[in-house]
Image (cartoon, rainbow, N blue to C red; front, side, top):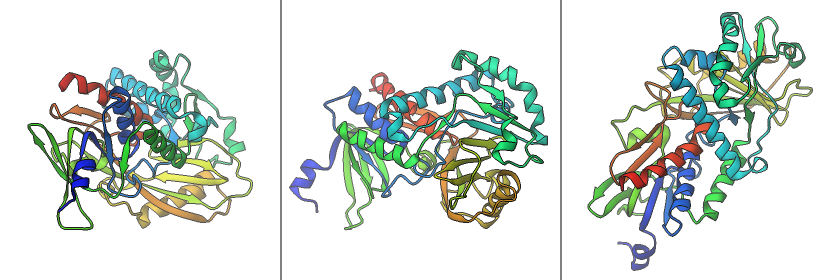
Amino acid sequence: MFSYWEQQSFFKYDHIVIGSGITGLSTAIELRAKYPHASVLVLERGLVPAGASTRNAGFACMGSVTELLDDLEVMSEAEVVGLFEQRKRGLALLRSRLGDEAIGYAENGSYELIDANAKEALNHIDYLNGLLLPVNNKPSFRLANERIKSSGFSEKYTEALIENTCEGELNTGMMMRALAAHAIEYGVEIKTGARVAGYEEKEDGVLVVVENTTGIEPYLLRCTTLNICTNAFTGLLLPGEDIIPGRGQVLVTRPIPGLKFKGIYHFDKGYYYFREIDGRILLGGGRNLDFEGERTGEAFVTEMIQENLEQKLREVIIPGVDFEIERRWAGIMAFGENKQPIIKVFSNRVFGAFRFGGMGVALGSRAGYELVQLHDTYR
């Protein structure tokens, strides 16, 4: 049994948010801004939000040329432009909320390597620039072939280089620490190691069941509204939603003396991405080699994809340069039938924002804002 003090002070809140990633913390901050006298609790199942928010590559990006052209195969122009704008607005909100210094934001350049199979994309740069002009007010893409040789990339592979003029990079660890500190400063309470087993709507609120690792009886928390921001793991709480987990595998090298490039880079429709970080190369991707196998919530690396990433280092990124791998890891993203994020009302007390298609850094802050705006309409 729980004590009188525990029941009185720890088990009842105005708003509970499940998930302490970018979207969950942003939602909690927006709730405190909108309802300054309300109590807001964030529940995180782990010690850190180890889905995608702390395991991404630190790309402040909105989409490469080949990625956007691929999207246009299954989405309308209006949908592609709208999603691009959501990403841009989300990044702007993140930067304005925390400040560039606090998140390690920098604009060292963003580029896409184009091989022989993707050369047709070069014929569509002007088209995409025109399509996105109302969002960016300047050309979004331009050729930067003069940088291929000086960057040290394989000239055999890289037949063109496209610069994305509106993207940057950030430090993921700094960003998440700054976001958590900002939430706490706003009066948000954050509990880690709090795995939510389920919830039940009652007449007077929502009952949230949290596993108790120190006893048999679970913690039963009560709230007026429940906000589910668990991205790839949302299916555990909302099994009917269109959520497909997608593992993203990453490696980082030891420092490489004389590394010739800075900035962030994409190739192969965004399925591969790399950057310079502290004199190292961080490289991720390869999910397209085994879509079925990578549809998992298990955050471990596989030999096949890790070997492929090392091959890309040797043959495309730094041919002829020795390197050693320092660390490998994996994160879990959320996908679905389309790339539109889900920001949804499930009842007048249960809300959710998730499924960001690998673009949570860009979309998460804005998704939290949009989710909280739905509260007035349905409460």
